[in-house]
Length: 213
Ligand code: SF4
Ligand code: SF4
Image (cartoon, rainbow, N blue to C red; front, side, top):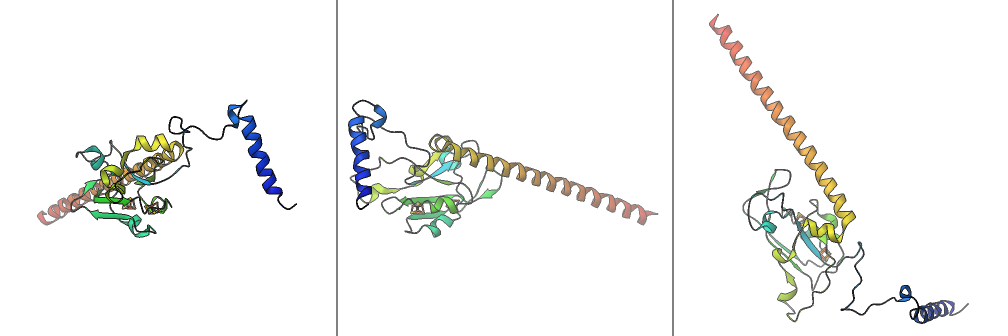
């Protein structure tokens, strides 16, 4: 029937309007900003950079030393509106696997341009950038105020767990698995090196004995 959808919509609105006087469940809005609805886990707006306090390579400040980002610049290249600006460090620091990696000396995101597509998150091989749920970011500074730098973007892994608990738990499990594999590989390499050194020493001793006879 022509207009059936409109009538259904109006009926739903009327039900909620009248029902809201007797049932709180019918209230579909709250009186913001005094009242707030907690964002659901899938909420996303702009990206932030995750740092791990326990994985930092000694340095300070904690947020800088613990950044997971290795400045590979994949997200910068893949960002459709090109609103990520990265400068790679000259030196390296150890990552959570104990591997020396570059880090971002500069990492800016212009959130006045960002379209919240999440592509940067999807392409990051290091789980270093995730989507935030913070939306109260308005400012009267139209240009500089919306260009967020490393320090403004850096947030601890605990924060990531708070806003996206299931997703963050999955990432932690994956990183722990990678760490176990890396430790096993390093142990096997160290044992192989020791065995090779022992064999070389035994060969040298056998050769010396042979020459002396
Ligand atoms: S969410 Fe999309 S637009 Fe925003 S920084 Fe990431 S890739 Fe760029
Ligand atoms: S956030 Fe991820 S993809 Fe972007 S530079 Fe850092 S490590 Fe690379």
